[in-house]
Length: 268
Image 1: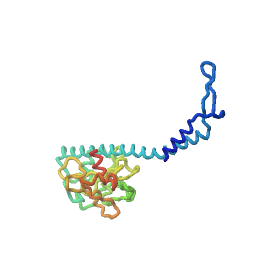
Image 2: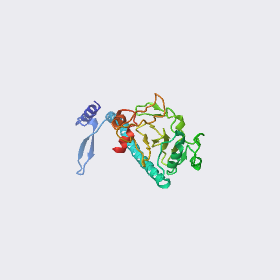
Image 3: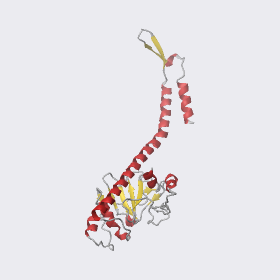
Image 4: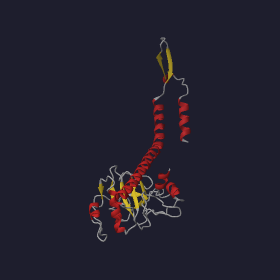
């Protein structure tokens, strides 16, 4: 409808005029005069108004698409950085990820952190790694400087507010490009590629990957016939924790929670 109105308006606007007050004359090179058709102020304002309406309807969508493309690229970059960090841990220490008691999670977290140029961390990794037999019975030595997003300050792709188990909030750090990383639920890594900036939405700027036992690179869904439940350690009916499989991740990205976008964007 808007397109038809736009075409109709300009068709009428550019019809040849016969009234004198809309015409003006310019002397040509031979001393004569050429007659040109002009536009009234009202017509110019109407035209600008229509252009403004069209721009207002199309620009937000265009800007969003450009932003999403940039965020996808940032996620792929972070995935590559983590893969390299895991490989360096293995080369230097001979260590790969082993599923452990959740209280021991800071150990591997800190080994990965030491391979990245972390600006701030929520965990005192120097204290964690200085003790070969880290005492998992005591509270994690958190710094209080970095947290994952607070409850209801981040959302799934449908706009539903989310939160994580508060026990994992401190297992977070900030990278030089502003990205926030959270180590969650034994072997899950959450990444907000543009930090605390909006949109803070799963599948747009928030993504995840998993670390599987003995693997040297992160994965999303390990094998056919299995599933992963992102943020599954946060037991709350209001959270979006779908059982992602190799068969449903694409649909989840397009019409669901957005967690499935992590695998979709890595493989597109």
